[in-house]
Image (tube, rainbow, N blue to C red; front, top):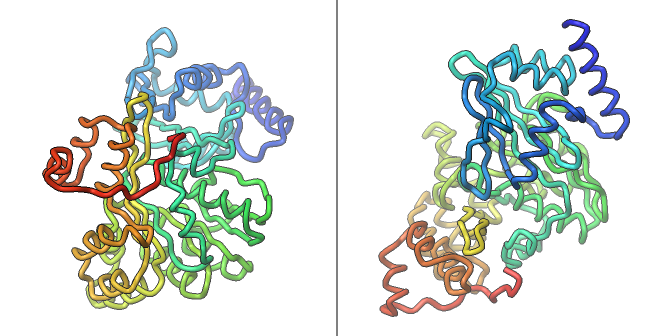
Length: 395
């Protein structure tokens, strides 16, 4: 590294020490600092860069190109220069040498989750804002019925949905509710650590994969020796982490985690698929005993030009437990649909509620409905759908 690069790296370290924040921090006055400041002005949630192509941002779900007068399409050496001006030499070396890398960093008062990757042999990156201000269920337009999931601090809670649909943010609101109302110990295992909790009634220990623990599975197993009441696993993505999470739930802990799945039935099916057929019956039995709730979430465009979450909620009862144990997952939707009085509802039931409340348009409802024919009949008055939630006047 030449003298100029050494100087900028030293400046970044001094700035990190000055503001007293752990981890990587974007140095003021650098090209990346100016670019991220512009992104914040646009209310962008994501910034994507590929060497040789114009940068893009995502604003309320829409992908937009960054104008050339803000930042021209960077070449590979320019992308690396962005990073060398701001990040520590060890991180820059990992970005250049590894095929993929996840980490987090601060820019001014914002924290970002970052993924660095290669495409066609050239450097790419994706940055996502992780808001650090206190967020409640109401702030996120989430139903207060979710609080019932936290009534008993034990069992497995899965928050599922496609990428970029707010799963981690929903878990964060649930953990913040615990933080403000329960004197418990919470251990998180994340890759990377996103939202940094400040202890209120609860005590938090936040661990990052590859820095504080070798893997999600190792983190979960060791967390059980650290006297936790609640364990949050950033994502379950392999057999070992799934089994460790279920063991933690089985031994009396509340385990919250995220999973990529489009419905509650698909979430159970996806977990089973991680195991050979000879082990699937045992996994189904463990899931039946320990799954406390499954939330499936998508963010829908609303009439105000932003996005509103739409949820499907399953909570364990005898019917749910029997369906999961016997692998009759096709029964789950019917069970959820008829158990509104138990705090459950399907995606389409909640979608209809958002439409009736004027939160989303008819076009949005029809586009995103799972059963469009049934929704169309409801809108024409052919069938009646009873309200499932008390309308939130601030929604």
